Length: 224
Figure 1 (cartoon, rainbow, N blue to C red):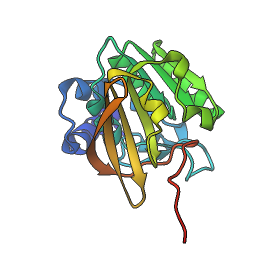
Figure 2 (figure 1 turned 45 degrees about the vertical axis):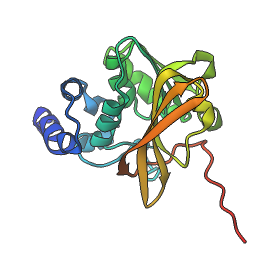
Figure 3 (figure 1 turned 30 degrees about the vertical axis):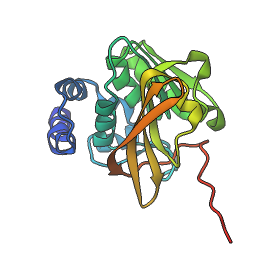
Figure 4 (figure 1 turned 90 degrees about the horizontal axis):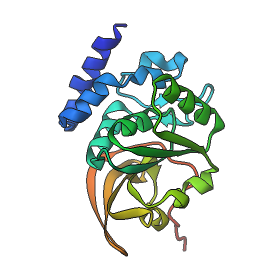
């Protein structure tokens, strides 16, 4: 496989058609080595339009989002160079790597020790020094990182039934949070903005599906 051709095709055939047109984002995706954040056994899938399993023997376990989803979420978040960002669901560390090139500081939370090690190793090999990978329990991850709040931007790298208010309160006024919200068979990427001390706005961005993040509550169902 010619990696550079595969990378070019990923951008032109998957990412651009998903309305990712920001030149800075496209340039970033052309330079950050996605293949370095994929398990060696899955390297052939690094540029394929699919979710990549991250742990051996767990095909339904933690997965890396499709390239087009990562790119679109990054574009919608509009991270600026002076900003501090929180990611929940580090996975392989690739989204954290992308965020690191856009932000001043990135904190990312992960509950699987194997993924914490993988992400730290990959980030170090790629010379990325402005990311702190925190190993937390799943329940703690769903509560964010209040000790480092407030954040300019928060990204949930996976889906949730609903965004906990405790995460929204960790945004600065003017801060943004992007998440995939809902249930199968169809979820929606949603952008939240803090518009006041106790006020938030939200808009739906696009329909999609993403793996569930551990530790977040599901919606209560009533039975009669």
